[in-house]
Structures are given as structure tokens and as C-alpha cells.
Image 1 (cartoon, rainbow, N blue to C red):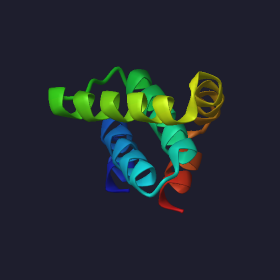
Image 2: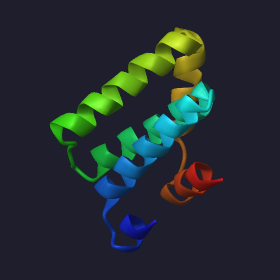
Image 3: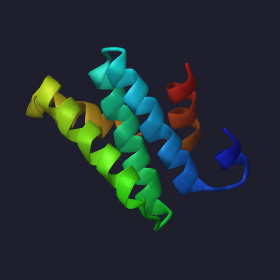
Image 4: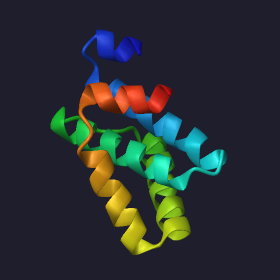
Length: 95
């Protein structure tokens, strides 16, 4: 990911949100949840923020995966995603 090479962690986070949307569309809510959690942690750590439209997409995806998985499984997958390193999150997104 070019954003990673440029040190743009917010950009990487936005890419992870995009990959989460793809995962959800392909019927993989667990994967989407992990990617969203990794994106959330990365953007927060960079003290960055999302645009209004990016925030809306992110919020919609989070609500969607939580609804599909249920609260317990969602929280477990979220915890798994927040523990991913930057390198592991990128690898997980592009596999």
C-alpha cells in the first residue's frame, strides 16, 4: 500500500475500511470486523480523523457487522483486529 510507504497511517486506515467493505460484501463479516478494528486503532494512534463521508461509511460498516455477528462475536473479532500490528493488518487485508 502506497500510503504505508509514505507513512500515511490515516490513509492506510481508510484503505483498511475499504477492504472491510469488500469483505462484508463478499460475506465475511468476521474479516470485516477485524479490518475495521485495525483501521480504528491505526487512525486513533495517528491522531487522525476521517472525513464526514468516510466516517459515515465506517459507521455503517461497523453497525452492519455488529448486526450480522451479534454483540459477543463482534467484540471478540474486534479485539482480534485491534491486536494486529500495522504490518499484519496490511497483510491480512490483501490476502
